[in-house]
Length: 312
Image (tube, rainbow, N blue to C red; front, top):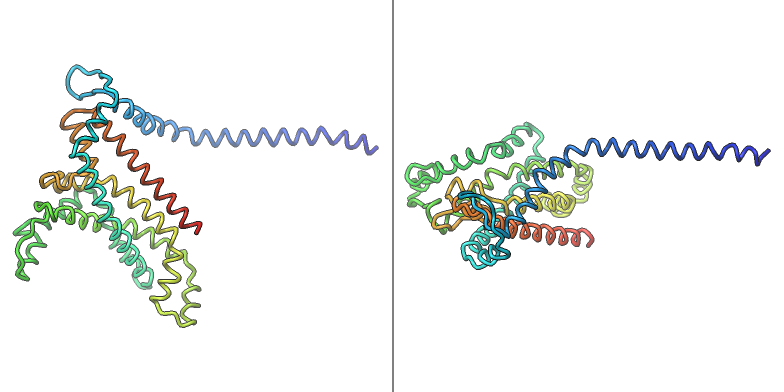
């Protein structure tokens, strides 16, 4: 009887296993069905253009003329690496990243900690710090162009009141990059502010109460509780900010057009000038390919450093 009973139960187990496998495959197919539209759009609008960019970087392509392309091999890359203007634009991009990243992280953290301590009308400070970020880049750039205007600009007026002369905020090669960084900090600090504020609200209040009972000052609480527990948020903010700063273009193009005397022209504007001003699409593709690998290398290096810090 026991043998017969076990033999009768075996088909039921196999059927149950087969039914479970069919259900799992059906669920996976449904999942792929939801993801498929995104994958198609991703392939059409990102993967294909990137592959096409690498292909065109080895050819002579122009926006004018009869069309077609001529294979040049590595000629575009040789010309690119021997062009001082490319290295200058790459340095300007790195300089902007170095100058803009620290204040965009530190100021956002300070604003978030101050706002998190406020118990009355906190929404007002959230809105105030985040509001500039929702402005289009053209509007934010025009606001600061008016502020920087010599003579009648608001900043020049204040300098005149205290007896200082006019400063060529956007016309002096030694000051123009700093002026763009100031504008960028005012415009985009709200995004990092929101990320830090969300991270602060995840820290249990009981930790601060226990530290206060033990006699920890607010500065000590910030040093030993807030900053360590915001480590993951800081890594995220730094990663997003470095990538955003490396891709700077809009505000520089609107405010200085890369000047004065190309002293603020970033890599993307150099690519734009080559592709859409000089109509050298193949050479511009080579510029874009090199910059793609620069950003990729910077991202990989930063993630490796972050993972080592996290492991330590």
